[in-house]
Image 1: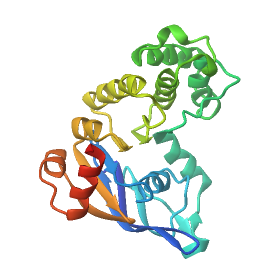
Image 2: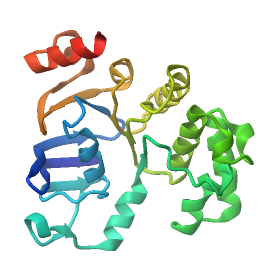
Image 3: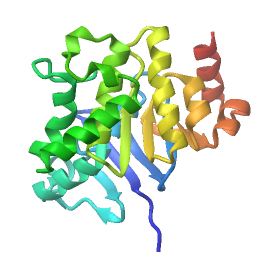
Image 4: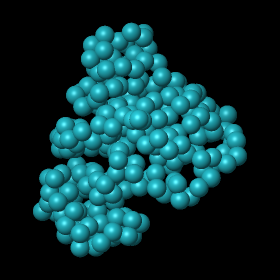
Length: 255
C-alpha cells in the first residue's frame, strides 16, 4: 500500500496567544511538487518548519513516509518523544533556507560534504565524489574550493541546494529560496528547482514567486490567516481562483 511521503493533518501552532496555524492539512506523494503561497504572516514558513520539526506544533499529526511523529505531552508541553526519530526524519527532509545558511569558514565543497560525513557517517571519498557531482549539477562545479563570501547570492543558494541533495533525502523543503536574490540571480535558482521537479523530486516549496509556483507545482496551497483558503492544481488556482481572498492576493502580487 502506498502512502504519502509527507502527511500533515489538522496542524495547530501558536506563539503565546498568537495562533499561526489553525488546523492545516496537506499531503505530498512521491514525486509531488507542492507550493505554499500566501501573504506574509499567513503561516507558510511556520508550516514548513513544523514539517521538519524545527518548530513544535501543539496539535495535529505529522507522518513521514508512513511513520507518524511520536509525541510526549500535549498542548504547549508537547514535544517529539524520540530524538533519534527527529534526526532520522530531518535527514530525509532536507531544508533549503532563504538565507543560505552556509558555513562561512568552510569551502563550498566542505559545506556540501559536512553533514553526510559527520551526521550520516558516510565514506569521505564517496561523499566528495557525490558533492562534486552535485555542485556540477547545480552549475557551480568550478567553485568547490572557494568560500561562501566569494560567491554571489544565487551561487550560494545553489550551493545550499547541493548541500541539501547531498543528504540524499526523500523530500526537499524550500523556504522562500529566491526571495533574498536579485531578479537576475533568482532565475539561476529557479532553473535548478525546475530541473529537480523534472527529475520527479518530492518538494514542498514556500514561495512568493507565482510564476515558479505555476510552472513547477503539481498542487498549490493558498494559506490565509493560518488556514487553507483554497488549493488545487496550478491551472485552477491561477487561472480560475474561486475565493475572493485569493483573487485579491493574485491581483496584488501581479500589480
